[in-house]
Image (tube, rainbow, N blue to C red):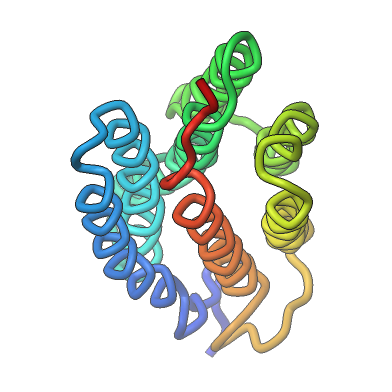
Length: 222
């Protein structure tokens, strides 16, 4: 049977990895709330992060696993893109808010959330943003950590800095697969998009470990 261009069936595993990740993310959010419940400021930043994590995987799974009418599918696709921007900013929040201070904290948080807002607006139905532009903005947000790397390294040490670089690399490899639609791998089961999803999961695990190990117990001197 010959299918029209653009009508190739989606890979069998499309979205399922993020469905599982969404369930794990809910458990991760609950854990963060429980362990920071006695520190209101830290609790807020951890909740922002955890909610961003759940939204990312939940919306992605909802969009990718099921079949939707064209208009609903387009709305969910844009929501999927928007939650990626929100998630990146949410990931920065517990690290920057709890570890940095002064203008470093204010500046980085403002920059990352302004970028997130720009990404959400860019995903709106009335705009048509090229795929490569979206991927580039994802990368720009992901590597904004380089700006804050010096104070973060001073506060946390080189091991934490290397872990953050590893997480950034994982996101970057996934974004490259998404932007260039390569490698094709096994298109009917597990293709470049599934590789992108897997990279997001592994990077999320890396950053969750950083948040739990470094940001949760961190206390500023004085």
